[in-house]
Length: 323
Ligand SMILES: NC(=O)c1ccc[n+]([C@@H]2O[C@H](COP(=O)([O-])OP(=O)(O)OC[C@H]3O[C@@H](n4cnc5c(N)ncnc54)[C@H](OP(=O)(O)O)[C@@H]3O)[C@@H](O)[C@H]2O)c1
Image (cartoon, rainbow, N blue to C red; front, side):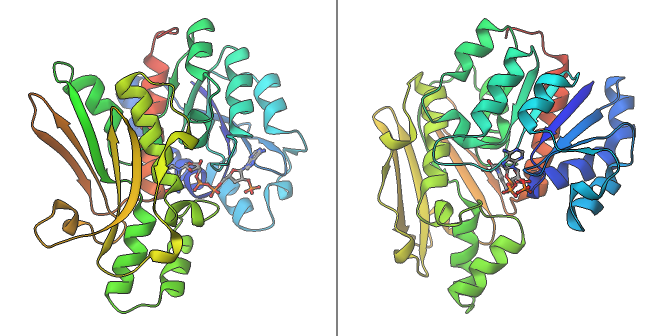
């Protein structure tokens, strides 16, 4: 299967590494190669033509993609429209209005390509990409948009069919937990924040993590999916403030039929949330017949999200179009 990669940041580089490392075993499992045909960032596009994926990562971490012979100054949008591929992987940064991600996804669908994305902002802006997916008879997978490495939508799709989800709550943002738990160990907030950026945990604008925007995006995606709503980000109630970060708090998101709420709460030792230390995440589905089904990871970051994106690529290839 031919894949185009749009965005080569924390997730993109991990994804290329994983495809390089796991390519052979994936081929043995699914009987097909994952062939990355192009990689785009803000400077332009590399047409890979079979080059080792490690050389692309090296170029990105050195002088930039432009140092590669096959670099062309064509935009991601043109690359999606003009180059042949089956799947477009959209992993540019989340933004206020969902752009440029939405334009990339729309271009991919218009060109009859399936899409995999980790970019939350594309799904909460009000543009109904799923309507277009249906009309164009394509697929759009987005497992990594909510709680990165945790299998949230696959769990809902394959393990919870008979259950009614009454509400969902959890710690959806690893950066805020990481920063606060580093402070609980005596580190300064500024050092903890810098470390979160260094580890690739944070959004492009870290205030999105600490002021609850990132969690609200995730909550809104869940709300639309669980309750069939058309909520957009601005409908979420966000009481979390960057300035209130302090030890003993955790950033909690609640998704109920009436909406999405994000705020910092004091956590006592008996709470399930007291387990969240470091770059961890918790998501709890409160259901009618499956009790409080809870997923937890003690480490979520760009590697785990890249692994989820890779899983989506594999699922996307075997998916019938129009689903
Ligand atoms: N990091 C995580 O752990 C995590 C987990 C789950 C979901 N996500 C989501 O996944 C997405 C990617 O995250 P990330 O951490 O990898 O982001 P990132 O490190 O900020 O990387 C974003 C990439 O997008 C590229 N880009 C921006 N505008 C572009 C354009 N117009 N055309 C082509 N490329 C463009 C940037 O290019 P330049 O390099 O040239 O600037 C950069 O390579 C975000 O939407 C984020 O919300 C992240």
